[in-house]
Amino acid sequence: MALQNSYQEQLAHKRRYWEKHVEAWRSSGLPQAQYCRQHNLKVHCLVYWRKKFVRRDQTPVPFVQLKLPKQFPMPRTAAIKIAVGRCRIEVERGFDPDTLKKIVRTLGQL
Image (cartoon, rainbow, N blue to C red; front, side, top):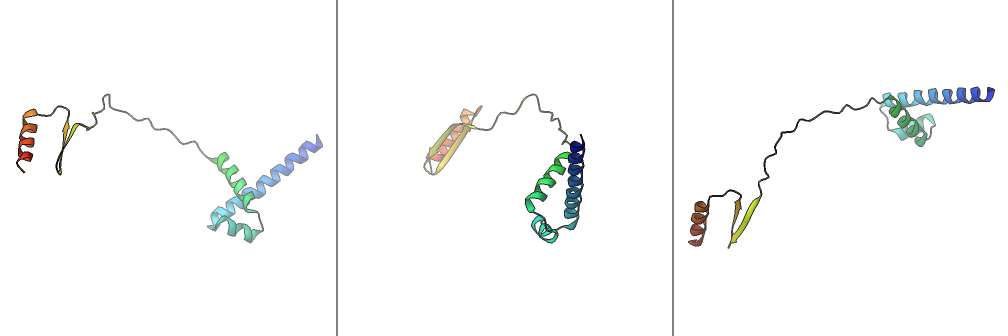
């Protein structure tokens, strides 16, 4: 039982030690590597404890419910594509046949 308490105390001491360093690093504005060199720490240890504290302190991100329309508009895709020389005609669904005839006749005269 005494060994378990001793281990828990060591772990708590280590946590406090690294918590102070992570907080000091954050407020220093220094890159992690530079802070570690100045304090004779290993970068991978600082990274490990920084991630550990972030996970513990991080508040969950709330989800936002999106309201979607009941019907989506049809995508504007061409039903027919016609190439005449350098000209290209894209005919969409629900086109006016008379207008298409006029366009083709006009293109034929060019």
